Length: 154
Picture 1 (spheres, one colour):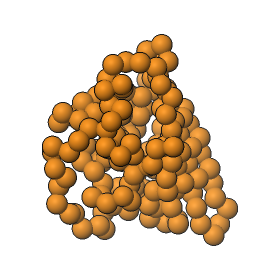
Picture 2: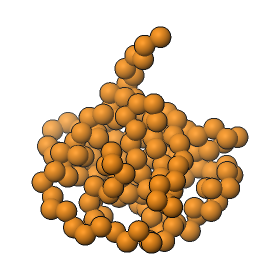
Picture 3: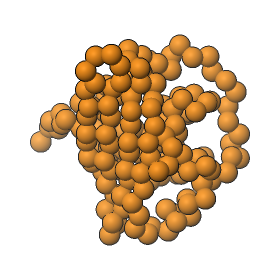
Picture 4: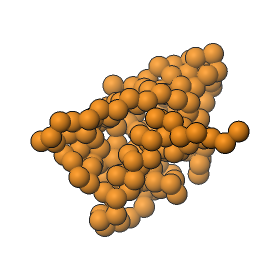
C-alpha cells in the first residue's frame, strides 16, 4: 500500500522548507560545545514515565512576520503523541494550521532529540538546558546559533 500524503505532512514540509530558506541567508557561527549540558528533565524523559509538556515561540519566516508556534508533547502508557499549532503572522489574514501525530525520542551525540512525524517530514528538535527546544536541520545541526529557532517551555 503506497503512502498517501496527509494534512500533517502537507503542513510540516512547508514549515521545514520555510525555516530552511530563512536560515540560508544567515552566516554560520561557531558550533555549540558538544559537551553542553542536558536539560534538567532529560533523565525523567529517558526513564519512560508519562508526561505532558508544552513549548511556545515565534519562529522566523522568509515571507511573513513570523510563525507563532505551540508544541505539545505527550507520553501516556508508552504512546508518544504531539500536537503542533502554527499561525503565520503579518499584515494579511494569518492562516493557522494544527496537526497531530507521533513522535520519537532518540539520542544523537550523547544528547536527546525529539523527532516529530518520523515516517513523514521528520521535524527534529533538541531540548536545551534551560528547558527550551531548538529546531534542528535535516543534518541534526541547529539552524542557528542564536535563539531565533527556539521554543520556550511553558
